[in-house]
Image (tube, rainbow, N blue to C red):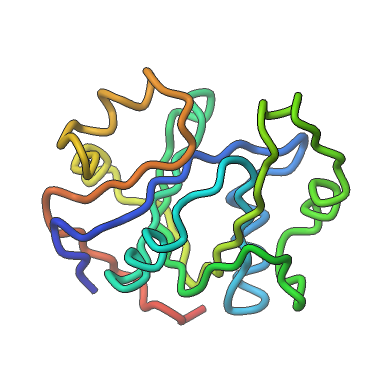
Length: 170
């Protein structure tokens, strides 16, 4: 499968939560169920823009913190929701996050919850790590990422990306 250069994508910077490794936890649930819900807590991202990305294939680049060498994973989401998924197909540690009592001082604003139904997740081949640019400015994300705390950015690859794994296959 090929993701064409110029395809609208979402960059999501993730953090491990306490002793839980974000990628491993999500991969485990995805492998067991064929999908996993990914939770984004914080400022609300434009739902119309998130749907536009679904229309372009639903591609998301998950980027690890600098402490984890900024590893990148490619994910595909097919649905978004601002309500907790009734099926609870997400990592166990999310129960702790959902039970947390966030106030305006935690984030400086009232946080929102946005859920992404992930149907594909695999490590990005290193040869593609430097091909992503910000949609608005055209700057390479590696030039910008260390200068911002923004967790979500709209990006696109400057060249085609080949995926060897079949989507939906375990």
